[in-house]
Length: 87
Image 1 (cartoon, rainbow, N blue to C red):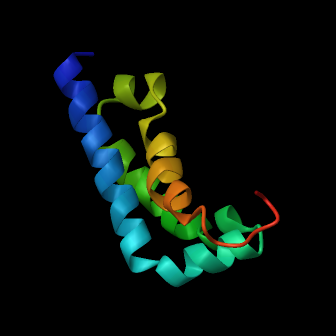
Image 2: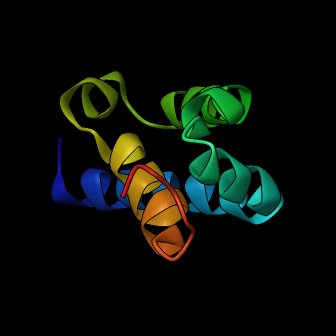
Image 3: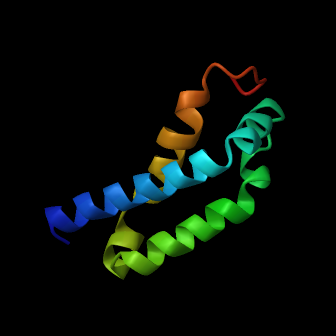
């Protein structure tokens, strides 16, 4: 796996996570408030993961956690201001 492959995979993961965030803002806030974010966005995250998996090599998909990291960085971290019992 080359550095170029890794960078492309990271960018793709972040782009997919950004789309999930953009189109599901209210669901994300509600999921954080109710501490059920991953249940609330289960279908969207699964669809995003499948898209990511289909566009990167099997080696990159299995050896990295770029998609999961992007979900945390893009969907959760910016919502630190949302009141929740999880933080």
